[in-house]
Amino acid sequence: MDEALLLFSVVVVIIAVLASLSSPSEARAFFVFGDSLVDNGNNNFLATTARADSPPYGIDTPSHQPTGRFSNGLNIPDILSEHLGAEPTLPYLSPDLQGEKLLVGANFASAGIGILNDTGIQFRLHEMGARRALVTGTGPLGCVPAELALRSLDGECDPELQRAASLFNSQLFQVLQELNSQFGADVFISANAFRMHMNYVTNPEAFGKTS
Image (cartoon, rainbow, N blue to C red; front, side):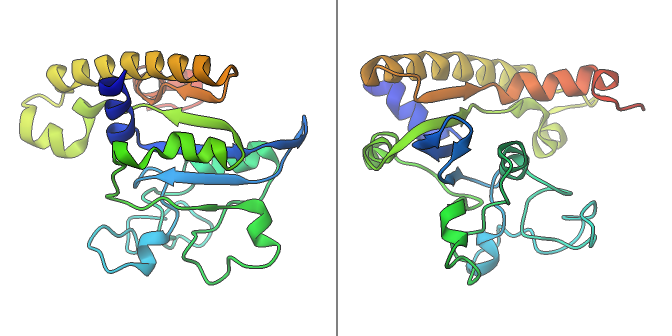
């Protein structure tokens, strides 16, 4: 179990936490923890080279300007906020995060961040009142552009890294089941980013996209 928890804590890229619900349809707050996949601008306020404050980031936003998200437009927390019927969470370093904005939640994600096992973040969040945590595993590592440039001769995803990602995600799912057993409730919900990505790439027509 200790090795599994270490794997969980070091490699998981997003923990999106909903605080306890005041009603079945209304979430009290939405908190985001993770790296560049969910960073919505915190690194704009940090002295770091991991930044998304220049083109082509943000090219599909209404302003066509970078927003600090490592994306051409919205990212995962933005989409989740839309489905919750809430406004997007602000970066925790943003000077606009004050007053009633604090009741929406906050985004603590930062590109390049890591989570160490000894922080015990998954347990401390539960003790602080978090009752739902969406945990995404790793995406298709073998398809990352940098890896394609280093390993691929024909544009195909690297099979070794793809297998590694699949092995990790299956172990992550087992860890979450064990954690839920400890808490006696479905606190941790897994999201298979690998499968979602590959479904989109291999069958874009199913998602309304044409080549």
